[in-house]
Each structure stands twice: as C-alpha cells, then as structure tokens.
Image 1 (tube, rainbow, N blue to C red):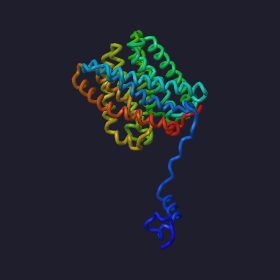
Image 2: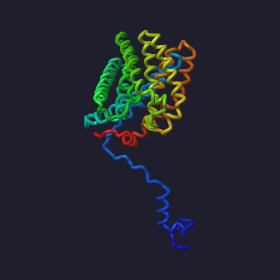
Image 3: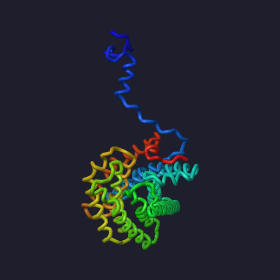
Image 4: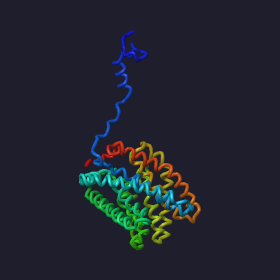
Length: 351
C-alpha cells in the first residue's frame, strides 16, 4: 500500500493528500465571493424598502380587519409600532448614506432594483402617514408631503430619461407602476388627514389613467409569459393599482369606479395565481418583495366591501395567507441586507 494521508480508505487510488485535494477541487465548486466590506451605512441598498412597505401594507390590512371582524386591535397597533421602528431605522440608514455622498442616490436611481426600492421608500412614507394619523397628525402630514414630493421627483427623473431615450434601467417593467401610479397610496392617508375630497378624487382618476398606460406597455410579459425569469415576481405589481384605485374610489365617493377597479383586480389576481409557478421559477431574490404589498392592497380592497359576504370572506382568508408568507419574505430580504449580499446582488451604490 502506498503511503498517504492516513484519512482515505482507498489511498492507492486517491494518491494521498494530493489526491484528496484534487478530488475536492473537482467535486466541490468554490464558495461564492463575499461582498466587499464597507463602512456602516455606506452601502445601504434601496431594496430593503419594498419588504418594509409590504409589512406596512399588511399591518394596515389587519387594522382594517379589526373593524370588519371585531378583533382586538391592541396587538395590531403594537405590530404597526414595531414596523414603524423598522421603517425609521431603514430610512435613517439610507439617509446617512445620502449624506455621506449625495451622488449615490442618483446612481441608485439608474438601476431597476434601486429605482424600485427608492419608489417603495416614498410610498412607505405615505403609508406610514396613514399609520400615524390617529396618533401624530402633524408628523403624519409631514411624512405624506415628503412621500409625495419624493415620488414626484423620482417620476420626473424617470420620465425625462424615458422620453430622451437615455434611461439605463432597461425595458419597461411593472415596477413603473410604483413610479407613476404610486401616488394613489396618498389617497387613504389624505382622507384620514382631511385633505379635500376633490383633490383626492383627481388623484384617483390620474392613477387610473397612469395604470392603463403602464399596463399597456408591460402587461404582455404576464399574459404571453415572456418576462425574464429573474424579473417575473415583478408581475405581481400589476395587482396593486386596481386594488388601490378601488379603495380610493370608495373613499372619494365613486362607487361605480370602485366596483370596476375591484373586478379588474380580481381578474388580475386569478391570472397571477395561474402563473405562480412560472413567477417563482428563478428562485428567491429581493424581487420577491413584489409578492407582499400588492396582495395586502388587494386584501384592503376586498375588506372595503365588508357588507358583501364573498368579498369579506375572501379578504379574511387572503389576509391569513399573506400573514404566513409576507413576514418570511421580509425576514429573508432583510437578512440578505445584514450579510451584505443584498447590496451586492442589487448593485447598490457606495457612498
């Protein structure tokens, strides 16, 4: 028997330590490269905001369910308080990055994950205004103004790039709903903060027209199944505009528009359910955050019709289902942020 490493049952075949090393190199791929280490808050990825936005949407849906089903609201308000602290931490972290190097924000806007995340941050600020409106109306008003102003700035930058043909983020995707239709999120907090109903009604109609325009350019990827595998979860965003338009139309006294929008949302939800396996084919990524808020918005639209038994039951069952997976997705995305992998995978800028 040949001399070897003493740890192999077939030393003549493996050739000792050298053979073991060669066999290891041929059978086990090298580990993925670790993301480069940077100073604290210098590479906060905007992709942390979509899952937080989804958690806020889920919390708001549960607050709505408290009134519909007669639940104890204390636990819901406590959960909303915890999500508020999470949003505040993420906002402060990204704000620190912007202070370290303001140009980093412009760089994030040039990528699809960055643009989607920054839009979600603005929308989360609007939704946070709804959460805080019963407790701190002054702070809520400030958050609503900041959210609308931030999203308006993003929309102007993106529209300018699209018109000039210089937008580097690639072909249009359903994420454009966040940029151009996202103002519909401001209707509910606006109503809670006593913004004039005619103004909010105008926002609802603008959102309806903008949603039709974005869907015209991007809905084919869902119907024809031509969207690239990594971007397929973004197709779920198509559900959010009609759901929010339905809820917003009810708040502004437009029941016919609300009913039409809810019917459209139900049809889109059915298509998404049929396409679910297709959408998750590429495996988990930060884009799975798109499965969170649109479903929460759909739950809210259904619960707005609480006097209609099918809508109330469907909304309650969907709320329970969303509560089982939305926190899991948020946890996994935030865990990627903690390890630095989220910033690396989404090509987040460095301050």
